[in-house]
Structure formats: structure tokens, C-alpha cells
Image (spheres, rainbow, N blue to C red):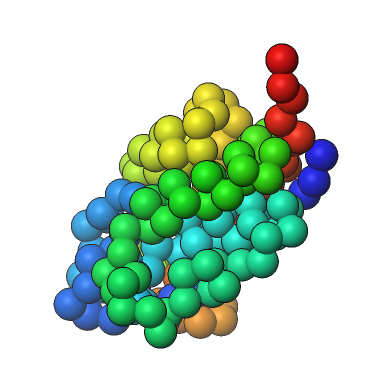
Length: 160
């Protein structure tokens, strides 16, 4: 077994959709980034890649590469899952936290969890997604950006 941790942050700007866990959340502001800037999926991918010893998302999906402009992060997660399988790993579980002052994310957390579970090929019970504010503190509390942390457990795949 191996444990990984991932973290991502993006600045909030106008005229961008807010995509978290593959869900477009109604909001007047969205996240700035080369791809869809889905901080939740990015943190999960970094946790998975880190646990497998395969670097990080910047190594696999560089923001200087125009082919990733506007990319759907769930499709990038599909690629990460191929790499994990090729290296003999499967997901044991993932636990993730989104740090955002607003909008309220509770109505969307189950769909985010389900999207991640489907893409990782695990039961939804193996994925947990939660959200918290930072009580007005820091850049997330000031509404300047949104961040996400994720931890995961990878297990060696067994062949039968």
C-alpha cells in the first residue's frame, strides 16, 4: 500500500465557469487556469500520482502545452488511471476537501464524489468529498481563490 497527498489552488475570476469534481457549479466567478481549473480533480490526480511515485500533474499535463488548453480534468484523470493500472496500482480510497468561502457546495458534493468514483473505477463509498470555508481567513476566505486537498491510499493490484 502507498499513501499520497495532493493540493491545488486556482484564482477566482469573472467570465469562467466554476467546475469542481466535474460539476459546473452555479457561480458568478470561476477558476482561472490553462485547463478547466478543476482544483478538486487536480488535487486528487496529484495524490494518486504521488502515491504511485509518478510525479505530478505538471509533469504529465504541462500548462505550456496547448493541447491541454480548456481540457476536461476528468479526462485527464482517465489518463492518470491508465498510468496507475500500467504500474500495478488500484485505488483503495480517496478523501478530499475543497476550501471555498462561497458558493455553498453541499448540494453538489455527492455528484462530485460519484464523478470521481466512476473515473477511478471504485465504489462511491471509497471516495469522500467535503467542503469547508476558512471563516473569512486567507485567500480562500477572502474569496480570491479556491483550494483543494486530497489524500489517497493505493493498493497493489493482484493478478488471479
